[in-house]
Length: 206
Image 1 (tube, rainbow, N blue to C red):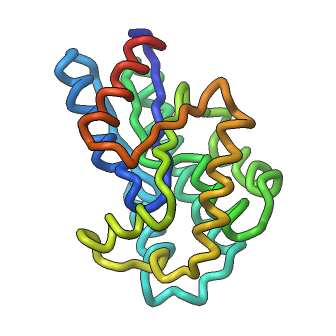
Image 2: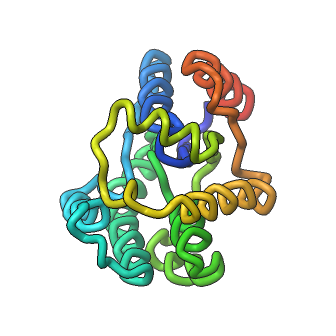
């Protein structure tokens, strides 16, 4: 497997991202690889403070533009503090969300447009793009049915249904535009099936 390698996971709430991130990280560690796992927003001290704002239920008045800038700010800190140094040292980075989340949630969900979000994030990502992105594909209905069983409600859970439909539609568009990077995984299947599919792709590609 070649280094450096940057893997990101994308999907709606309840798609199984965090679970699959953990499973892949464990499997790579079994292969004696050095792994750094990060999440967005968050992953750094500054990023976690931003996460408290973007996800806090009390911040329902946070505007779409402010949300977009906060996500980019968290990403800028994460890239410079964690991701770039790790990749430079030959470590594998696995991210629970990255730039595609902003494209889907703010670009499509908030109707700000994909081009606007790219312009806003160009400085933030500092030319760092994932080697491969797994989009864990589940519909909003399935995702929230899963999520409501296990997770406390945050600000994003309070959005209207049509917001998540726009996000999901955006997520479906992105793999068509970035075929060389984004791989769609049917995440309605069992955790084990999804994990095995991801692992087989990682072995084949890298």
